[in-house]
Length: 378
Image (tube, rainbow, N blue to C red):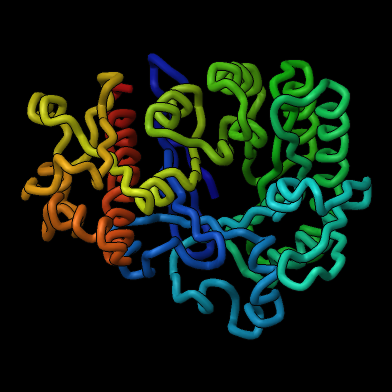
């Protein structure tokens, strides 16, 4: 399952390897978001070309449409979307909780109305587990209650109580329905240290294949998020992966790796790409680094990347690639001027090419992080 290969001497960074039904994952790892069974604008072959190790799909959205029966009939989500590598599915809890006007939280689960046809649905721990079993994901998540920010102590405390209650129910169902899936618990508690420690202790006592830290990418100040990770990390099983849900920006990922996190997911690279915001490596950082052989950011310096807005007029006659140090398809074949033209002209090819590059940036970032941990430099 998970093997810890190396720990950094100067930080809590870890190098690991996670075995799943559909392949082995080298950690730290970033998971592109395939919400409805597709990474927006990209196909599975493009993801493979980028050396994507694992993707994340959304249980809630797939349950609503096309529905669990169709995906099960297709032979599971892997066959349905023609993806042969690992998939992590969340429980659907966060998406339901984000629909504040249309849901009611009970100890039994969450009652909400479908955004497709208005049908009333009660998402219980049992339903969350059954749907993920039908999807056939490699890693399934428990149902949890995620509160936003700011939140008062009493509400955060109740969410921790429910998260533990549901985690216990999911664990019982998991052993009944287990289909070679790995199973992760989720730690909640907002920015309250005592609640985070309470949740971490309760979830680890239940026992899971891995542990996720939820509720730290819903508006909290980033320093508070780091503080919560620092507090709970010493109590987490060293021989199981840690997953920080929904984070984040490149520098946040680097910092979280240093705090002992192994897995990440976020919509930032692909969402920003579709809006013309591109991540590139400052030339001075790359040219002065001989250690990094693969294209990607040099992360020993805090300013290891910059953002460019490709629709800016200054790129109209810029015939350089987005990043001369990047080997992705976009940078090898097209210029900034052409990409700007595509965005200005509302051509969908622009969204695809920008998405390829931004994901390449993130995945190369993770590759370089792993290399630096291995060489004792992070």
